[in-house]
Length: 65
Image 1 (cartoon, rainbow, N blue to C red):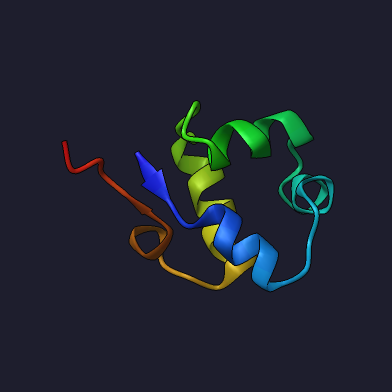
Image 2: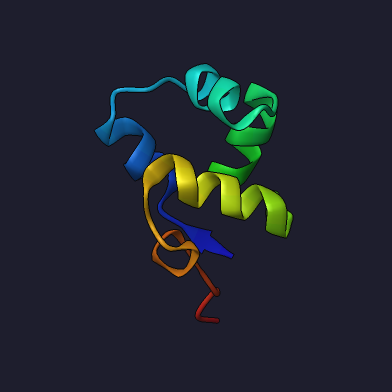
């Protein structure tokens, strides 16, 4: 799954650690999400959407392969 997580995080000037604290996950989880190595659970996707004040589908979208 593709996502705009890094773009949104950097636009706010947050480190991966700062975003991790806001989401109550580890920095490694944020890194895995940003690099596409991990797809979030639905509850985590909702938390991410709330933090960035976006709809889930505005942050995450399927691979186009």
